[in-house]
Length: 210
Length: 391
Image (cartoon, rainbow over all chains, first blue to last red; front, side, top):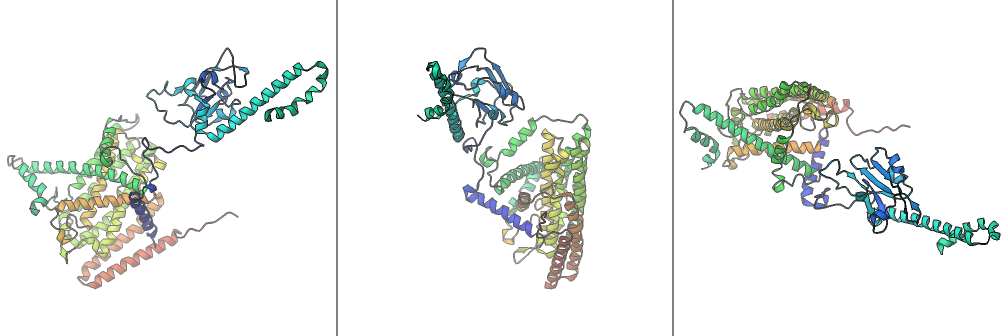
């Protein structure tokens, strides 16, 4: 009959109306500043720079390669490369960013900077309460504001952070093995040099497992 | 004591006026009533907005506003202050005078409609013999304001919204009037006071409200549908369909002018609810004769606010219609039924007392409704949805 659907609909809204007073678990919203819902693990909004160790400036993984700056679609990253070098996590001398600014009023949270970074140095944060009274300076985050510890990364994205750590450890082990092999090669008598090129390849996995 | 409570505002007015010289008394009395109406209805508007926001929230399993004041009751005041402090923007290419006049015209016209409503016993501001006609004349003038707003803004969305609004309001004005004419035919008067007086009788403690007759119920339902469309309420809120028209005819309004449109819309809702109450729900009369001790104005406002609740309920339930559905519904379904209802009302009057008229009138209306629905659903292919899949 015509009008039946309307009555059914009215009954449905009436049921919701009454039900919201009776059962609290019906309510889909929370009272935000007092109550919060923990963000899900895949949450992401703006990028941050990961550092290892206690000192943020020394521990920054970023080597100022400027790939992210070039790839950033809205061009919100600004990097100034340092003139001197500092050792990175494997001990290799690298440049570091003298300036690293992200304008979060321009950032569109696309995560492309994270995907292109070969050094696992930039990751997505979950911090969203970034409102400020200064819409220019306040929204332009410098490297100090962007630097967050690896522990923070583990806290917000545990699975992803473990993968990253494993990858870095593997990398480090590989480099160390290579260094060791190079050292062994340098130390070995010149007569055995012909057999040497085959040796490091099976030696490397043996080194990492040991 | 009961009589005093019932007539408290009338007595108060008389008492205040008695301080003035006799020459000024009639003018002062009218002014006082106007002040009363202009104070009460915006208050009810604030209450209606609060009810709407809370009610819709609850229907969507939310809490609704709950920050300003207890239960968010002061939210309308906060909204009012906000709209007062906002910048009043007039588009450069807009017709500034007409742009300014549109919300003013709307509010003035809407308040003038209230002047003829019997708010309580002896509480009609202007007791007009042709009160109903005056109300409809004022109600029709809101279309002027809608088109003024749409045209003067010089914005395509405003203009489209205004055109939709005017088309819709004119279409639904007809069934609105026709369903009210049935009441006029039975009462034999256009005076809203007389219409209420005719319903203010009781048999076995039950009132003689027109809604409790077959033609009255049919007329009330169609009046409610037409009134929803007249006030641009969901599901007939096409003129301000935000998904396609930004905000319809008041797209280019901001600050207090926007608030005036908002006020006009809600007071329009209140006044048309007041008219529906007066025509079909017995106006200020009590629902049971034993409840006659409660002041008449309380009954009036209770019925009006109840109608507002139904408006909100419907808004929370139904999605917006399409323009062609809207027009077809008005001209092909509601209008034929209201016309038939006029004949049924005439029949009701001719047949006189007795059970025969109940049976006959109900049968005609039900049959017509069933038939119209069937034909309409058949033509529009409404019914269980058939899905066709690509092979």
